[in-house]
Amino acid sequence: PEAFGAGALRASLERVLKTGVPDRMAVTRYDVPRPASEGGGFEMRYWSTVNLPVFDRQGKMYCIVHKTEDVTDQALSQEEARARMRYSDERFRAALLASGTGTFNWYLCDRSLYIDSALEQIFNLSPGQKPDNDDRFVEWVHPEDRPRVRLAFKHCRDGQDMSVEFRLARPDPEQWLACKAKVFRN
Image 1 (spheres, helix red, strand yellow):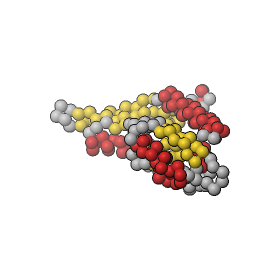
Image 2 (tube, helix red, strand yellow):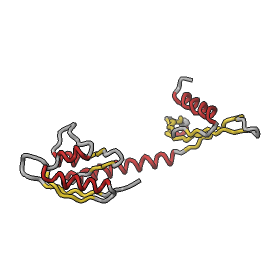
Image 3 (cartoon, helix red, strand yellow):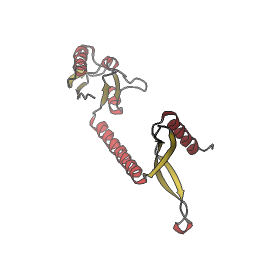
Image 4 (cartoon, helix red, strand yellow):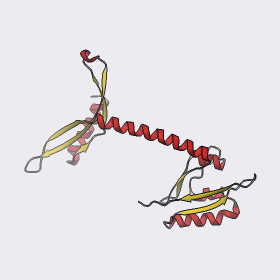
């Protein structure tokens, strides 16, 4: 009863009893013992479980069908795809760093801004200095170029793609950046 799996199963069954709707449990890994004749040890398997209420003609729940499906092949292929994606992302970040190109995501719904490590280096930011919204981003822009950058951000908020060139606000020699952004909705 104190095992995690038993507790998760009990909670799922209780949700079905309370709501009367099917409850899908998280895909779970189980290490299944291998017979000694097959080398012993354990085989890693993944299972997908759904608990389904069954009702009689009067609409009263009289049982719950506990359906479990082996999804090991799908889970392993998804893990391989995630590993390939991580590798691809690492190569992409390395290419950005090598080219002096950075990227950012700006979420128009709350104006939050997320910049990558390449852009941090271009802006010469110390830890904790990341601009987290468009107003803080503009603080890093040369004062003479800020109106142009603010206008470009306004165009993005209006749903238009952005292209703007500006200088960074630094005491050292001027550094110009070209910024292009593509707006995606929904």
